[in-house]
Length: 206
Image (cartoon, rainbow, N blue to C red; front, side, top):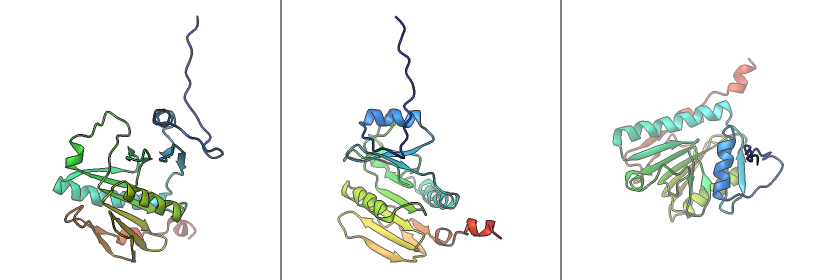
């Protein structure tokens, strides 16, 4: 009797709505490493477009600043946009920047692809292809699951929405810096490279 041959799970995510359990989602991610995927709390697959070069540069700057602070303070561990985790709601998310304090890392198993954990801090950067309401809903989901501090940085309008646990959303217009408050003690994010990032498309036309 011939053995059954298994094939990678390849999905056209642009034309269908697919619901998966966590095992199926993990397999899908392994079979499609080129895709940027998340899973909603109800098991709906969320496919995201690759970041444009301009947004990728801004993400790099954000992650670099958090990483530099973390290397000095050693208060926790940071993760970039390619790392995913599972919220208590069951949603699998991968913010542009994630930070988790040391006390939560002690019992966190990295043998699991997407471990269940509530980050202390997240950043989402809106790119030109991102729907603002979708990102705002995502930030509220972080907040509802216990994330202590979240920043939604909207570089298109030079705005920052601050999501604090148990508080109303605060919107800042054109801030030059942001404080990590009591979550990232002593951290100050410089936004000059985020809001003043050169327009690569305009330069290419010159």
